[in-house]
Length: 205
View 1 (cartoon, helix red, strand yellow):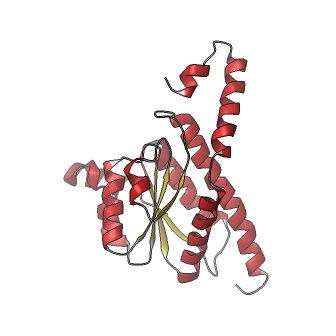
View 2 (cartoon, helix red, strand yellow):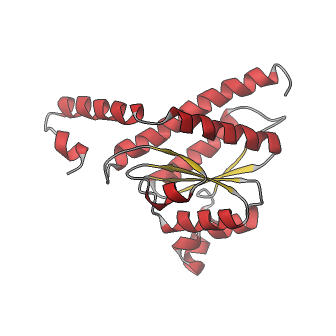
């Protein structure tokens, strides 16, 4: 039984209170040092003009799109932009690759076309075990694309494979709190970078 099953109550107000309390504890368990290292990686990519690719499935695909939007456009940086792309967004490409080559290939084949050494691949997954993300991370490692895993549950294979990452510790199958926390990370990181870019633009950018 996961934590959500354990604290479920038919009274919606009681359940809401318990869910929010649990989510607060999940967020409190995140290593802020991991957040800082990821931010440093994004800032370094910006300085080098490298592309940051985001990938994920299901709810994590939506988070990948949201991350790419907030990083690439939410920071309002055009003289020295964050070059961010979500490989979940082109449905014609995704469905063509899935139909012709199999779903496990939808990200790695895009990365083979678009990626280059020094770019950054950010793979988002609650379980950390999605085969299509793992294939993309394996390719990235072979061609010197940096890898970041944003995970939950026990982190799965991705947590072990990635050069760096942010882990959100939850029980297995707790997709709601895991994906909630991943979106908080997006907004936290975006809020920091908006202000950092603005500050730097006032100095030497």
